[in-house]
Each structure stands twice: as structure tokens, then as C-alpha cells.
Image 1 (tube, rainbow, N blue to C red):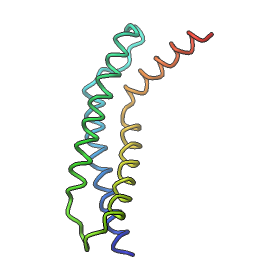
Image 2 (cartoon, helix red, strand yellow):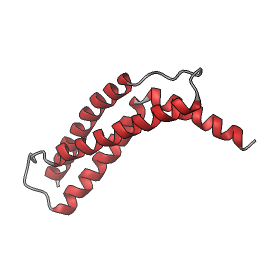
Image 3 (spheres, rainbow, N blue to C red):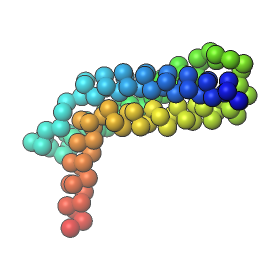
Length: 117
């Protein structure tokens, strides 16, 4: 019981630290939101950032799934549950580190809302 919990914490911290480092890096390589840019340019920037985030998340998952376990090997169901928790944690971290992306999505949302008024 405690061994599985320890392994879950180990995976969680691994996902967290890798995600926060790479998420912060991804945010820094993309331009900040500029309200003077056209919506088309903003859509392109959003699309490129999504592509980089997805590719990065894919590789984080590959690396994390290859990590050796501290204790006895988990059965595949337990390992899949821990991996799912890591994926959820990674999603939260990426969401919170992508402030340029969030500002651009908010701009796009406002543009779409204006179409429905």
C-alpha cells in the first residue's frame, strides 16, 4: 500500500518538475500577446504553441513511463492509474505556465463572441 503511494508521489514529482521547467521554457519562446496583431497571426501562434505543447507532453510521458520504480514493480493497472494522475498533473502545470497562450486564447474567444452578438 505505502509502496504504491510512494511510487505515485515519485511519479507526480517527476511529472511536475519536468512539466514546470519545459512549460516555462515553451512560454518564453513564444511572443507575448499583442492586441495589435491580426486574428490570423494570433491563430497561427496558438496553433504552433499547441503543437509544441502536445509534442512536449508526448515526450514527457515517454520519459516518465520509462522511469524505474523505487519499489516492487506495479501491476499494469496500478501503473496506468499513476500515469493518468501524472497526465492530469502535467495538464494543470502546462495550463498555469502558458500565460502568453491563455491571453491569445482569450482574445480569440472575444472575437468569436463578437460574431454571435
